[in-house]
Length: 434
Image (cartoon, rainbow, N blue to C red):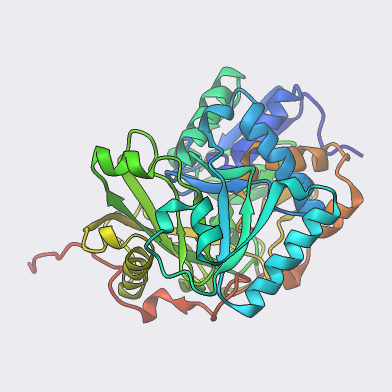
């Protein structure tokens, strides 16, 4: 049974982010007439992990996720709204570790078994890797192997979010930002179970027949969903000649070191990210519906704390990656260093379902390290759920599951540290004593 009609009032909490704005786009494209985005910031929200120069993307999975990323990449490369932001330069997923190699082999074989072997190549050793990634010609690649993705590369994330924001306004989607868009609590009917809207920080009560909660790493404001982690990134400034030489390089990922992507056109910046378990930011918080405070990781907004950068150990790891892969830049200063907050689940699958306690509340959150690559069609999954069209295997995969919350991360590696236990990231201005 559908959860909403075409004329239902639909509120999207976190509507300026990846899942929220994608959901609004698919609702509007299917003819829903009364959609409102609620967010502290306008699209693209400064609190969104998608508000970034670039993100990895591509057709590189099998099974259910293979179906989703294949459709997403098709939209990235053919839908006029997304096509200007996709860069099909290829993507490498590399390792020198036996366990990780096994996982990559399994994925490679699964893609081939589905008859889609033309999408990926298996590469081993310096010669084969450098043939795909000449920028690694001076790197030590002894023992390295992995997958080369032919249909993939990277997408201009912030630009894509911004383009969707403009399209939503053209389609008549309404918005509320600032204190009137900042979530405070769910409004319930007298039965204590039926959702009738959202109350925001300034006291505004927005009436709604259906609320979609898509607040990304800020989801614990509403749900007892632990597991928000931060990853650090930095940028290298390049000369026009340096940027020209790196134009078109394959997006390069190694689960032990991190990843790089070609400089975004016009920015003369090379984004460098170190790969590790991430950081938590543990605090006591009482989310809506909880009987008492819960100890969980709460994002520390870069927009609200603009002097925050990255930890000393993350900075050293990024410098190590640069020295290994791009030694010609090893002494180049880094800038635009920040943390990107995600809300991983233990099984690396979305939490995309009806809330079991409240009627009229759809939860659309959780991260798998893949959400932005599915930006064009993640909202399609949400709207399929709303319309009762989501396939049963997907409903089961993304069902409500209390065990999905995670104080750390499901990504490979050690358990995450807490920000309070590391140094270098906090650079609050020194205030004079009165």
